[in-house]
Length: 321
Image 1 (cartoon, rainbow, N blue to C red):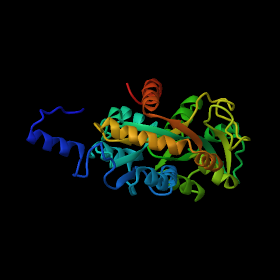
Image 2 (spheres, helix red, strand yellow):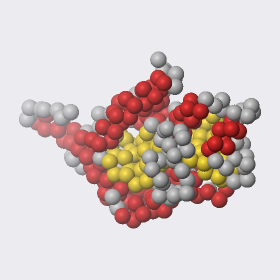
Image 3 (cartoon, helix red, strand yellow):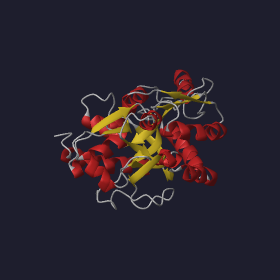
Image 4 (tube, rainbow, N blue to C red):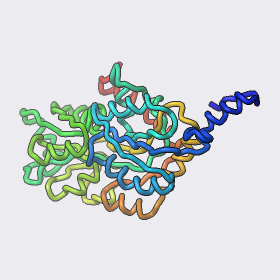
């Protein structure tokens, strides 16, 4: 909110401080220092991959240094708790994952933050989630998987985080097929896929780019895309294999509450420029991502709509009253 001052010598000084003239702060000369880009997961995961791709372009467009840091824990909640407590001057931004930022406050008494405290700037990437088993497994189809899961011995499934997109997919599949399976959460997608590839779990809910990268080491049974996924055209969707749900993670960037609208607009324009860059989009597609370019307003509407849908889903699953 803009403050109004009477034009006195003292007020004029106050204006200089508020606008940052000569002080290194404020919206008018943003950014005036290094921008910290916090990733609420560990290094090597999808959020990190995209931030590293964006880093040199952000530095060029914002004309400042960008420092990528990591604040992993609780499926991203530790990082988002840090975000909402940071100064709203645009020099601290954070990766933002949906549905995590909706499900965690909805299902936990104290996630450390509330969904409406996450101040969205843009969404730039989608990542459908698929279910896979080892390449040498006797399980070849979703029907085989369901039969095995019902055979008596509890199956373990690796996934990234609790009340994340992976966890939601696990709960939905378990509910639809009435399966008793164990979900094994990790601090990030990179750790989750390594747990699976190391033989520590029977299956994995994995992001589409990991499915593309490691497709020779696994048998991908189904994917949570709404239609055939371009990078994995031979893999059926869950809807095609008889499970009526989709599963995906949307990635974007957010700033602390009360950040100046001019600063948000600067960041929004910058991130959308990068998201709409043809070379960036081509790289994403080749790596198994879905390029997106949703601005602040559209992103907020998307979060609001999904919040309503997830509330209904969580009630159906018995996760909330």
